[in-house]
Image (cartoon, rainbow, N blue to C red; front, side, top):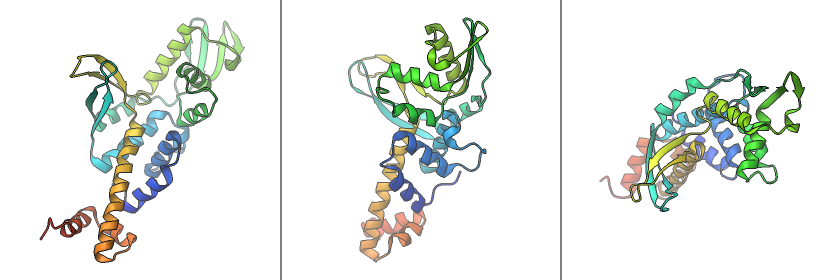
Length: 252
């Protein structure tokens, strides 16, 4: 995809910064969705939305992703790197219509989780409890359930732990971009751990940083040349940077 125009980037920043993380991810994905299907992003598997966000981030700053996490052992900062291209290669493994799962006498007809599910569960009381949140998400993805040839209501049954784990594993396999994990070792204490890489939050932080910088650019050039915001934003990124170097004295 092509890089977003400066004005569109600022519009997204303005409209999304007060939204929930789930709504923000969907708004950003919708802005860069190039008609990849008739299903809206909110109803696609989470990984399809993550792929759109990775393409947006690549257009903003390239495919190399660098971030930091806190080591659970010593609370130090651990740096990590990832490749948007490598992550996007996983999109081909997403199964939009997964087959039923047969396990322990149960037949589960299910679908991949969506951002609409994340939004709905986030609004439920007590959903900040990880165990409750995981159970609510599993319930939402179950379309029908049979046990020993009898059809049962998924919401009225506590699935055995082994069946729930099998379903969770099937969901992870069907949408490998839904939960991106990175294996790390702390350079200070040598503690090995696995960290959750929140791609949507990472992309938003990048866009927010770009938005703030654009406002500073507009302010500097408006003060120096009397240009309006649309006039400054209409400049190419390279031309805008050249004028800023003149203003700061870096370019004689």
